[in-house]
Image (cartoon, rainbow, N blue to C red; front, top):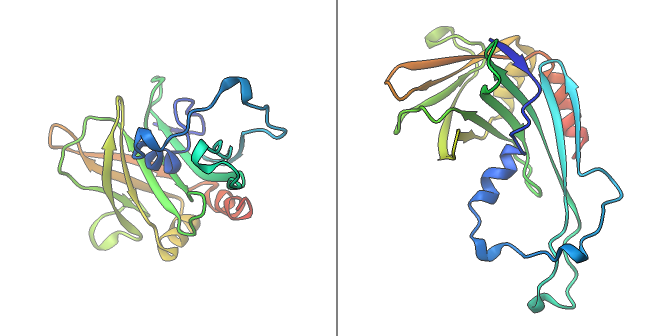
Length: 204
């Protein structure tokens, strides 16, 4: 199993889960003829060990007829740090963990993306040091949010103490119950997370 910073099928996970929940009526239609090319890149990335910092520039929605004459919100940027886990010899990742903030939010959100072969209802847990029971340091329980075509997402809000354990540690483990009722264990690396989180804070 190896950790990699490439996952081309993913967008900003922390943002994507919220946008999926929006009703279609809340989404503005954009006239392609009126779109403009941004002066700055809409997606930027930077690698830190086994983590990648990824930022997306979000364009302001075009005002509708009812909003004519009103000033739209300024462009917003959302960033996250991401680690993708792949098994040697397989092209598709088996998990992805992201930590980031939604635009306008102060609290960090941790999102885990795993294959759809999960058991519901079932627990998903992130161990800060990869141990269990009394030997565990930095445990975090996540809540399942939704499943899409090839993956299921779970989220939790990590507190500063939990993040400090991750940033100073070497590795952890993501555990959940799969469709067969067995406990799936996915190793995670914290190499580069401290530097990636520092860059994430500066990107706000």
